[in-house]
Image (cartoon, rainbow, N blue to C red):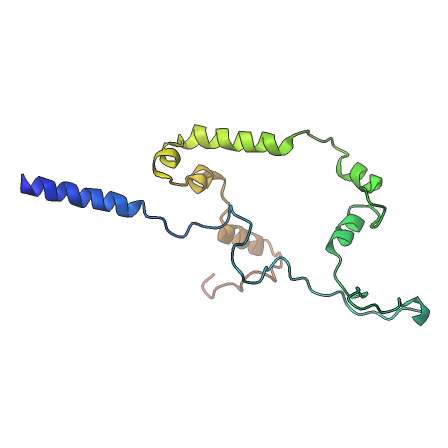
Length: 171
């Protein structure tokens, strides 16, 4: 009888230890809670350039911008065919270009509902509800991209991959 109680106590302890909260991967939480630098907020400056006429240079202002300051929003608008600074509202040319194949109303809510249904159908959500276990990664495991295999595939086809680590000696 004493052995059964000890075995039951050890089993309960093991189950509770498995439920202990650890470091959860932050992939799904894109808001940083740390005081460290934001790697997406660091943008390299534009290259310096000499204007044809020095009279084109704006008058320097304290706390103002300069020609080498990065302007990612304006650069994206130009890349998509719009005009930066077209007014307080949205640039009509940009809106027309990005919505040329149609716009689905309520797309965020639709995707959230479809994602929830996908996870319910594929993982039951019992673990999430009863034991507060996140099954997000398990639900999408079949759709996960193997980054090393994909890198190898591109290298085999002769594509340059300068931002990826160099190939290993045995590859």
